[in-house]
Image (cartoon, rainbow, N blue to C red; front, side, top):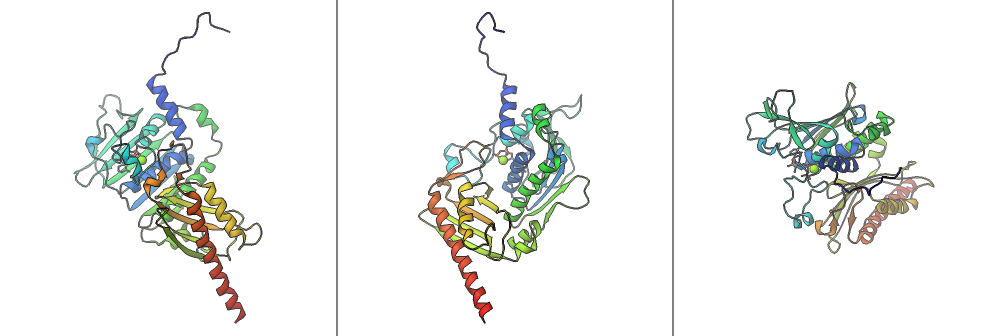
Amino acid sequence: QLPETPRRIKPLSQDVVNKIAAGEIIVAPVHALKELIENAVDAGSTALEILVKEGGLKLLQITDNGHGIDRDDMAILCERFTTSKLKTFEDLTSISTYGFRGEALASISHIAHLSVTTRTKESSCAWRAQYADGKLVSPKPGQNADPKPIAGRQGTQITVEDLFYNIPSRRRAFRSASEEYAKILDLVGRYAVHCTGVSFSCKKHGDSTTGIFVPANANTVDRIRQVHNSTVANELIQLSAANERWGFKSEGWVSNANYSVKRTTLLLFINHRSVESSAIKKAVEQTYANFLPKGGHPFVYLSLEIDPHRVDVNVHPTKREVNFLNEDEIIEIICDEIRESLGKVDTSRSFMTQS
Ligand code: ADP
Ligand code: MG
């Protein structure tokens, strides 16, 4: 039914705008967790503990031992575009931490119940605060919203409860908690392999067994053994490639020609962020096709460090793929390296069987 007079255009309220933006950035619990893990790592943590209820929809809790947050910053912590990592637009091109540009905690606070407990080295106690819609809120009726002093160790604990509680359509779209938990384990496993020097644990609430546990002193191969299995850990070759002209270095561990599974596992990090790249995946699979039985696929862990000036980090946060300059050239160098390593292992093998 048509209105008699033209509909007037009105701005949406800020609250609605924020909720829409947050729901676009954080589509599933795993996206919130990724930001929280990266924050903990950025804070110099060497121990990360993750607790999950109902696939992260009921509870996502991450406890770190990093540098903590200053009590006086807690009031603006969850405002949009507040960050300790970036000051000017130019910083975007040289910053090694990237992602949400001060949007992660803000987004979470618009679509979940968020509480933060944190303690810096300088502070004589920990501080605890609750947030809603970007602002501090009172934990109990009658109390003020200011952070409250409590006992606690150095580091930060972020608790995210009832994700999407105010977006019922999104909440209903999640069919199975175990599917969401599987995505969480996949992500935690990626960071657990990559972040040497950091211990990781990830648990489902009420489970006596740990989903993932990796001690701080484990090397990369042992991390892969813990998170994946010994079969693959026993068949890895170390990879290393660099090129000054294209401004990149890469390190990794890839499976040899003995190892062949139905689906490729690609753990890809660019400047220490877990990312996806269909171009790299495709090139790697093509490289292995010459070495593996038909239908066989490899395991590849690759950490790429690219000159930040050459990476476009200013893409929308929902983009899980990253753009960088001379992608084709870089991929070719890495695949050449893989090809050479696979070839070497092959020769030694046939040599051994001959003798
Ligand atoms: P960004 O990471 O892009 O700066 P966030 O919204 O993720 O934006 O975090 C805002 C700020 O809160 C960070 O810049 C950092 O100073 C602080 N912060 C968040 N999580 C932690 C943490 N686990 N430990 C210490 N500081 C943190
Ligand atoms: Mg962040």
